[in-house]
View 1: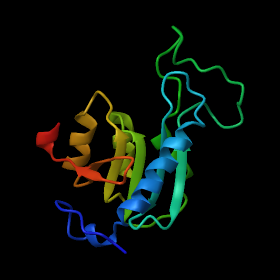
View 2: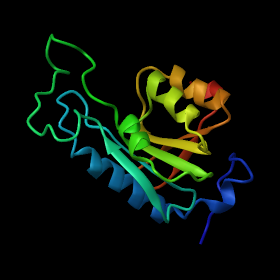
View 3: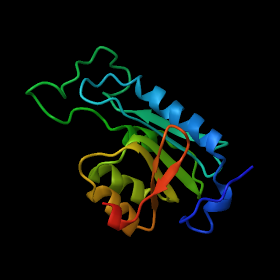
View 4: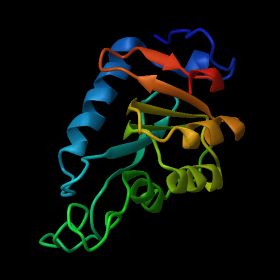
Length: 166
């Protein structure tokens, strides 16, 4: 059974699943983040359809595939940004070109990932995140691109954001 969520776009609301399903997806993304080998942040992302019945892609932050023993450089003085972000990994692995997708992230996207999200050929209807990154400019840019942005809580509640929330 689908639930209406106040404040969301009319096209999106009827497709979103119930609170229990959203809670399961929130838990899945948080658990997926545990696979990250990054020493700084454990971040995961999934790309799914609006009713959360089909997962199209997923990603965690970390080094390139096949380099299991690659040392994480995030915590060293060599470089600050050595990990490939979860959103970028999920987008690279996305092979399905369908409209009406949601991206669910354990941490809100950075500016660079936001650009990639906006540039995805078939687009996204919404980006949901569990934890907010300190820089909220990326969330503003997503909203400017007419992508709905919301914070997904572990109980499945969604707090839809507008620019006044940032």
